Image 1 (cartoon, helix red, strand yellow):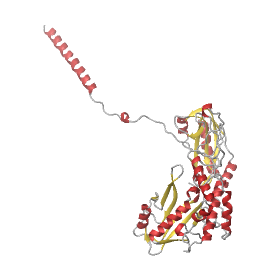
Image 2 (spheres, helix red, strand yellow):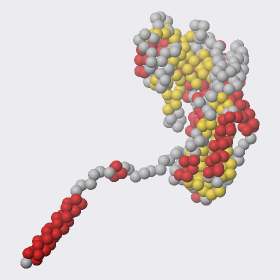
Image 3 (cartoon, rainbow, N blue to C red):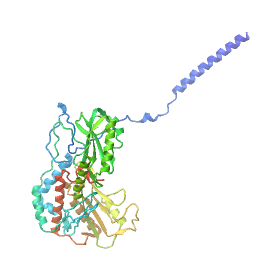
Image 4 (spheres, rainbow, N blue to C red):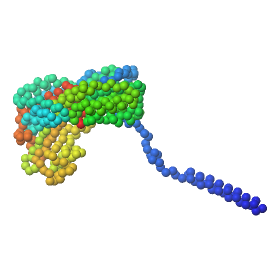
Length: 459
């Protein structure tokens, strides 16, 4: 009887344990779950790179579907459609108002120089609006590599040269994209050495991107890689999630650091060959000597056009403190550079993008490191990077007007390096030289302020 009782008690205890365990499991399942990191993340999206239209590059021809035929456009020299329209509008206006332009624009006169950084100083010129007889232009031409500059001759013949140049100005038009040819992206044959990569089969951006780590720069030169999308019949920066039929890789032939040299070319070619091997693609490699020679020629052209125009604001009385100059520049909407050495005035281009128009420097003052109350000086310099500012915006007129405004507010005047007022004949001469520079850039297919020109005149 004792054994039977013990078994009954053991069964009851076992049953109670099972019931208690089940209740514990039910309560555990109903407890609130801790928030996991992935619960609050938005769905993943693939990055999209908007293509920027630049001149046509050599590419494999693909006949577009009937529903996506590329509309034929009139041939042009270069530049994006927005930049081309802005330049065309500016040139048309200046040709219609040639006489008024003489009173509104200023230009440069060249002095012979050579080496990595050379300087140009235009002759005296009239100021703009009420600043007539008090404007100053001081030009600095600088470019890495072999810089050569033509000599400047002053005289009344500059006025007649300017009048003869005006009728030759024509509206700048956008380059054509032939029927069936892919729409170009960033890579531009005007300043790039292009290597086509022919893929054996389509490849995705997800596969290509991890292999492009070495294709960022070759020495000091930018490297770009683009893929051809059949759906859009266009080149674009390689993007994850997109399929590409062909690739093209390009290295910039020159920039303000100088021309592409043999060492940089070899670094670029080695990276392209490694990419081609990884993708089972065939690469059409260019000749090194020819490519390097093209880079030197482009660098020489850029050096002859790499000009900065300066306007000097000189105090009539006591020196200004750096703190006062900083206050004035900030109130006028100028932005201090990251290194603290200059303020920059930005202006929106035809595409809506804010780009630097000119800079303000106060001697060797660093507005981030120096004691602004102790630092003082009598000269403010406004510098315009001529190739980087579109002609249609009349950038140097803007610089002169702002310089005159500073002079009026700060008790100063605009003078040349010899503290002399500027004459009307010199003003006309400078304007003629500046127009010659604009024409030279346009004839090369790189109007001032266009995307390809901004790339060439950068580091």
